[in-house]
Length: 279
Length: 279
Image (cartoon, each protein chain N blue to C red):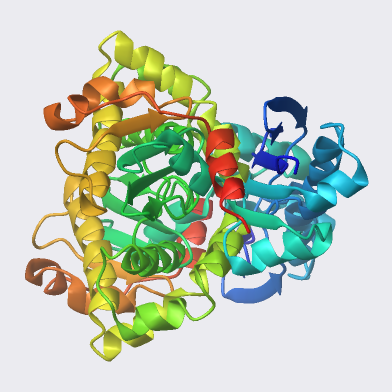
């Protein structure tokens, strides 16, 4: 009897990663974006391409246990659309957050995680169940994220024009093009546009800019409040992921800082764990 | 010597109004939207059409003192673009908020105003000068506006799903289509879309819905804080305009409620006042 084929897929909004494991055999591949909510057809094309790049035969793909964690899988309906489109007999489709959390606490199965990139979410894994919070998108939330930092920085700058905010180097930089420019840009902006302002905030915070530090303190307060609310308690490992994860380390309360850990495994590792459980 | 021709224009995002006064002669006209920021060419076409509908000759329009208050005039550059395009010798172009405030306090020249429709702004007129606050658009502000009420209602509803918010009839209604639906809609939504939720909030508040009343209390707190900050003091007339103005009356502090007045004149009256001052 040969070892079963396991396939792990981590599909994000900027690119997707694929890995195959069969006993001691291991291979990896990549493809383009796979956010099924923002571009379903494009995501499907990339998923097919990425799976094809693993070098398996059609028959082997039919036999494989495949777990995909995909950005933009908001509910069962989204997952069902992918299942119906791909028609693999052993396919599990999850939200990309689910495989990231599983991977981060592979062996222990216990821990909390804050994923902070252009968007944000927090999660707490315990007793085999994950509780999520946040991740509603910039219009409705995504507090502490890069997009949120950028938007709140612009709001802080405009408040100075109203005589109600704190002046700072960051504020002066943001106001260089004038308020009309900011309003015009913001009216049409998506989270990625706001997120491009986040590095200015981070850089300013390093030089002691009070407005920038205030924003990071507000973001950290959101993260710590939400982590406690969904079940983080002192002693539970805490992982910060995403491009902005490390930025928040010094802004978290001492009890959280004391429990910060590196993630045990990647999102692909998490997807493999789900794939291995499939019948 | 004949009386001078005065023309007043109130250009908004959904329609524009035109009025002509020459001694005892008076005429009015209407045309389509005139937001020069969201659609410059369309706004110009409507402005030409509306002025034409006043029934004046080309020579009379050249002689007339014209004041336009236009939505989307964010800075001097926007005003200059309109001046250059229309080329009337006696033309003054202002933000539509400026003519509304001038009209509201025509004779007294003193008062504060909160304009609350899909967007929001506050203003304080005193000693011939107006101080504005807010009006930055939904992404960056517009607190208390219809768009803000709608967005914050959705945020409150999603918080309930995270176990952190207050359940209510309004929340149940907003969650009927599920959170994925809300996220998909909100990611693409403009202020008008969010504003369409505001009537649900207002109706719920009338039946005592605590989530709806909390939102109106938050909006009222923003309005009263901002009005005081830009110079409103007890005894100064306060006008609430816009479709949502009246909604906030019972939620304002007692000293503000005691000073609420009807506006003295319309935005067209304000534009006439500016036109009459032109050389």
